[in-house]
Image 1: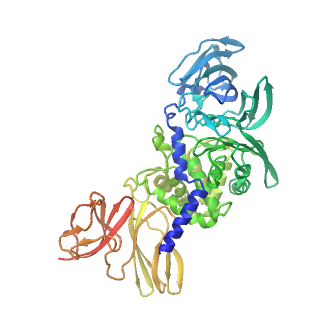
Image 2 (image 1 turned 30 degrees about the vertical axis):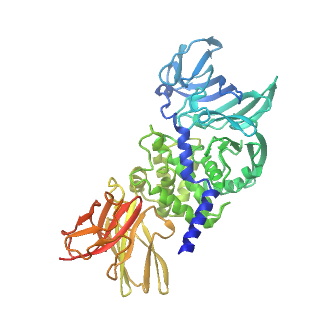
Image 3 (image 1 turned 45 degrees about the vertical axis):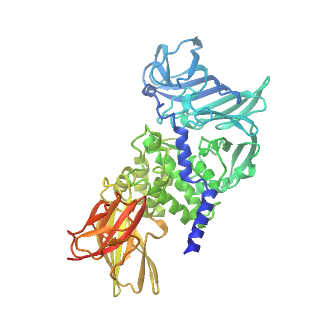
Length: 633
């Protein structure tokens, strides 16, 4: 046992260093959002759609300051007398140019917005543009997001990270989850010796005196929070990735002490895998890239992921986002799991399928991810509170969402799961646009052929997860299996899910699956010989906590919690109960049926129980301690 525990710890430590662990990932992404949560898009931006942004900035990586102009080409959705843009309060408008006329005044329509009144009404469905000249020191943490200026080993660096609401902190835009610009040009002028990383393809580099202007452009639809720049003394490299005969440009903007080979390693293999599962790389006509920044994690900026390290897990996670998050973007922050749960689960799949990562670590990844999900007994994958950064960027979305996808895959089968997901990500009505949870559900139901309403209501929209008591006994060649489910949150009365068990013993090693339809159900399984052990949820197929699995063929004996007197006719007392008082206490029949629940106290009144054997368990700090006792008169 000691060797096994040491080996498990060794494997886990390797896994933690070999991949970018979701626990750390959500934490750094959460920190990136702090201070930007209140800067949501203004409701006044709903009367137009952006067609094209022209962003032209002057930056000096040695100074935390932005100056330049943004031209917004738009289509009016209704007759418009004015236009409103999301715009950080710390920034200053120098002037606005409209119809070749310069206006020195702009109006503020509310918190973090700027507006302009047109000389005459713009008709509905017409195209027009407005150019905003501005400058200022973006608000936020000077060395954090959304606009950071930091020192790096070979000089200074400016980088941006705008998710979820931070784009307008450094450029005027429409910052919501309803509109993607059809194309964007990003021109950035910096002192010579610096380079600029950004979206799309580099159109050219102009020398202007002692400065250089990098001219990037993307012609793929892009949401504002995925726009980014990194400007500093980068070393840059190019490679070609080959997927099904297609050549895809990859670019790297790295610090001087970083390895080009490490940035490149594994990316082509990941891309081949993701292509086979989810279709071609969405931005293959432009590029995929890595740009280093000084953040602890990564950010999936479209066609150019910003990377805080080059671990295999982080590279897989950010690349997966180019499909799940960039090609199709969550249509509300409540649906963030459509981005993050998928990217997290797909990272796990690289272990399962042995792509770059060692498949021996797949069981460890599953166990780690599931244990993380158990930390949220009252939380849902779907986020109802989008005003609080802690509600969005946490492991309810990352790890619990990922293991819920794994459970869904078990329920509907590999064929239906992967077909449904591929059909979702390939849906032409969603591609390069936005999706909500019902859009994914519809595609999965189509591939599965059955309704998934109850699954989504319980596992996605509902809180918690199932907790399972199992007791079993053999009578000749017949196995009796008693299954009790206790939801971790009473808001969900029952989680419907097939439960696998592994049966081992004399000349037997097989998997059975039972499908309870109520909180307590007994299953009688004939024609089994020699079963000596029943293992709940082998291979971690479902997201469910095992409370206990016990053989009741013989009289139960005490386990890891001591109670006395035993047997008892009235009261039980806890021995060495320090720290347990106030924890959740349950008493179950040996068949696993819950008969009593309360808060743990020093003495427990069991006088009302019928005579027989019971299991008492106390849940404390995510651990279950148990004692078996007998009630007598």
